Figure 1 (cartoon, rainbow, N blue to C red):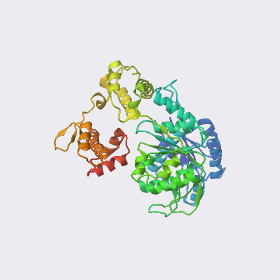
Figure 2 (spheres, rainbow, N blue to C red; figure 1 turned 135 degrees about the vertical axis):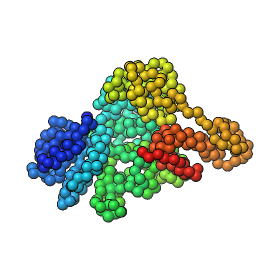
Figure 3 (cartoon, rainbow, N blue to C red; figure 1 turned 90 degrees about the horizontal axis):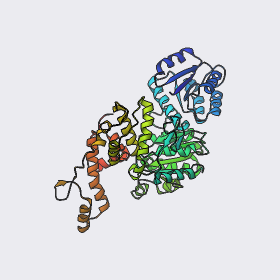
Figure 4 (cartoon, one colour; figure 1 turned 180 degrees about the vertical axis):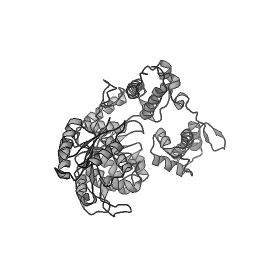
Length: 477
């Protein structure tokens, strides 16, 4: 269970926050001085620290620096009054996770603590490859012995000790973040911070501020200076997931940072120097993006010092039994179950399914089956409906106006013999028509789920829907 340490000299504050934040999922402990807080870090090894900047025995910056020397990866959230905001910002520049101004907003505090716990886990839980002790909760394991995965392991081993930028290429759900963390875990920067940013999950208008920070008044809502992730992660590693979804303006700033380690905050003139290792990931074809003018070619080559290609699950199906066994063990322990026996008829269904969502979808399917199982056997009926009975492809409307299953070779011959232009994109458009209709119908219009199953970002899905003239249905979530 994650642990939050609150360091504040006001007993009422510690008591109130402990009552409101402690739960079955979070242990909360308190300290009334900086020295006691530092002692508890040694004794209890908390996942996050909430540090009041004004303490009776030590300045807030001195306390923060001591915590950083003990564990640079431990997220520290600074709590400050308006009068000491500049001190909090200075702590942020030195690597604090976030700062909050009193009086505290409980909803905001909960959200920041949750994010800090996630970051703490990413940087402090090793990502390893190898099969022994596969249910060990102290590590996250990359599973597989197939030739494609053996190549991935070799690539991680080659590139991890070298202080170079790495792009990880692969479909959504293949485990790109896990590979990024394995590179970090085996790197020279493994004792520094690891920060992960999903570029597709943050609105375009906010992504640049999230990465580079902003000055007060630089845009509507910028009430205080913000320190960005590149500044926070100095000397550490930053993982940019779905880098293909950034705007060209943000790409230009990333390029400059990769070239000389410098950038400016949004709305600022001060040049910031930082030393970070960048690991990027995308499920998109960046070379095609370059050809379409949607990704900078110079950034692509600056990133692509040593690329790692992560295979989809359908290209390493010999790993499926091992993955099923691994997830069954892990989730059995998590759910208090003992359903680890996978009979041949269940494995046959799993092996016949296409797994468009890759390992992430398999992981969800096994967890679902364990919840459904009433005995120690994962029977076929425990599997999700879409895995047991995949929906048939209904087809697309062809040139003659009839509706039927698409015959790609036949359609291709028609286009070639008719000397039609742009055959590549017309074939893709025909296949997309099937995929989009079927996946959106299956997901009930939930574009987040649809994009995960398709293995593309939500931004790409919306672009495809818009290009065919309809944004498609979307359920609230």
